[in-house]
Image 1 (cartoon, one colour):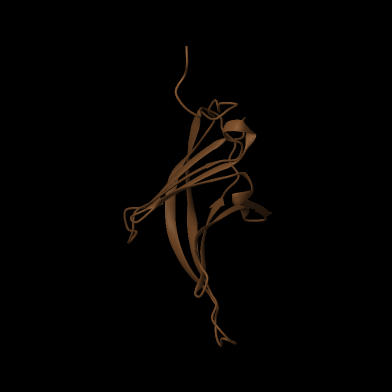
Image 2 (tube, one colour):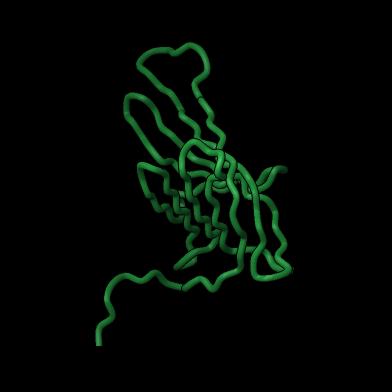
Length: 140
């Protein structure tokens, strides 16, 4: 059995917004890579921009998708379950959590973190990951 090095998730048919996520624990150049795309943006995160926390639920992989000086920030986390591959890939179902972290001038009352949960389905795979990123056109 093999541990996956490539995860691809998308929102399920019942979701209110399209969402696509790709997570590579070790991507090109040996850095982790996380791709996030929704109906309004497409973002790529590498290395220290990606936070991975191992929990009893699985790995929680998080990135900050929006920062506002006066309103706070928005993060996206995906719960990555443990997977042992017998073949080249396995179907995976999980959840993505979008968290709005509110801030304001002066003390704020009430809940500061607001969560939105999105069901996700996809695959866990083993792929050949390039050692280096492509940085431009080849020269002769």
